[in-house]
Image 1 (tube, rainbow, N blue to C red):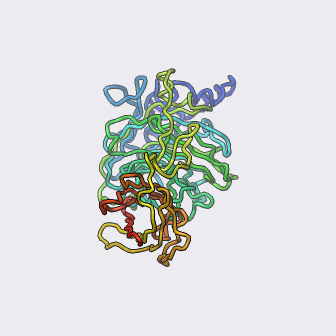
Image 2: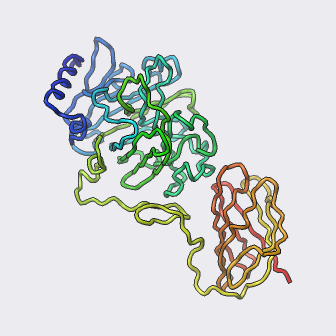
Image 3: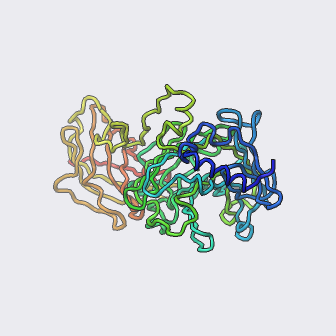
Length: 462
C-alpha cells in the first residue's frame, strides 16, 4: 500500500468536519494497530509508518511493520513490530551517534496539554533487547520545540539504564518513589527531561530518574502492560503515576517542565514509541539487533479507557499499592509507617540498664568504620539515648541518636530503628532497621542500602 500524505490530511479534515473529537478517536478500541497496515512511501523515503503517525526511523522495511499472529499480539489481531540494527539511523541521528526506530503521533492527534490530566496505556514486548547497558529508550514525550532551536527536549522517558550506574538508594525520598515496592534488578526507569530544576542531575535525584518500573531481562518474551497518568505539570502541582501489570510503580510529584513552549510544533507534549539508543552511551561496542513489539496504545481521560486489563476484563480490580519497607498502605496510598518496630510479644525489662553503644559502618572491600559511640539506656524494654550520654559522632555524619527507638523481648530479641545518613553525602536520611539478640553476642545489624551495612556493638555498664 502506497502512503499518500494528501489523502491522510483529507481524512483528518473529514473527521473534524463531522465533529469527531480527537479524544474519542484516540479512545477507540482499535486505535493502536488494529485494522491498520504498514504504510511505506518510496518516493519520499520517509520510511515505514502507519496512519496517524510520522516515521522517525531508517528507510529499511525491517524498521517497522504491523504484524498479526503468530507474531506476538497482546489483544485483538495485530501488533506493531520495531527492529533496530547496527547502522540503522534517521536524519540527524546519523551524524550524532544515535539510532532509532520510532513512530511519533501526528500533530492533529496530540491530546496532551500542559497542566491538564491525561491517561496513556499500551503493552510492550521485549523480544531481543538485552541487559548490557544500552541506555535505550522504549517510549518518550518531547516538548515539540523546533529542532532548529536545539531544544526539542524529552519531558518523560522510559529508559533502560545499566544497573551498575543506578544510585537509587541515594535518591531523596521527596523525589524518588522509594515508598513503593521495587526490586534490585528493575533496570527500566522513568526519567524526567531537562526542564526546570532538574537540569542539574546527580545523586539526590538519581540522575533525574524518580521511578523504577520493571526488569527488561526478567520480562523478555512477555507482554508488559503499562498505564501512565500525568498532567505534564509546569509547577509543583505536576505529577506522574505509572502502573506496570496492574501494580503501581511510580508516584512522582513536582515540576515536569517549568515552562510552556511558545513556538512548539505541537499543541502539547508529543508521544513517540519504538526503540531509540544513543551509541555514545552504550557500554557495548556493537549494537545487537533490537526487536520489540507494542500493542493497544490508547489515550483517554480515565484509567478504564486505557488499561488493557480493565478493557479485556470488566470485572478486573487493580491491586492495592505494594509499599516498600518502612511504609504501609493506608487508604490505597503508601505512607510512612509510624510504628517503628514490628510487634514483639512480652516486652521485658530483663535487659534494662545502661550500655555503651558502638556503631560501625561497612561495605564490601572495606574495613569497619566506627562512626558513633554513645551511652544508651534500655528501660522497661524500650531503648533510648541516656540523658547523660557521652557521645562521639564522626565529623562526616550527622547525629542520628535522637531517632534511636526500639524494643527488647524476654528472649533478648531486639528490633530497633535509627534514621541515619552514615556518609553525609547522600542528601537524605534513611531509616535503618536493626535486628539481633542480646543474650548470645550475635551481631546487631541493619542494611542501609545494597552496599552499606551498619553494625551495633553493646557493652553493659556496671
